[in-house]
Image 1 (spheres, one colour):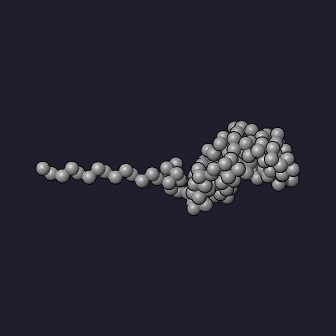
Image 2 (cartoon, helix red, strand yellow):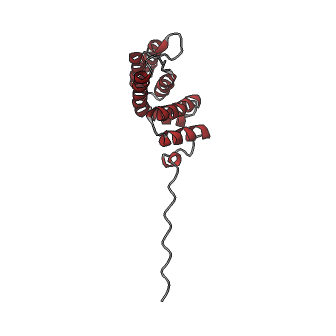
Length: 153
């Protein structure tokens, strides 16, 4: 009798980055998303995802980065809220930076998701974080509203 054929080997699990279709992404974004997936606590997850959002922001002239970055907004907003609460609970004096929220609101704006961008700015205002600009998130909302009005003409 013929020997039993060898069973097919189990396919290697693909890295998270390609599993989510990031073949187009550069090394910085791929690493940030992998780091986000590997994070063991909310601060590490928030920090890693912030790096991914920052990279999408830097590469926003390319539509894939805008769309991908904007697609992270709900999860990013949730992570920010947890990170903010935990940071303030541990050390109320710590200044939480709003630069990631600024990057994200720009990505949403560039992706035509004006209401989501405004909501994110309102989250920043509610938490009292700064985006490091003169007009702050209030001024950002005004600019997003202008872009929204222009887009809806």
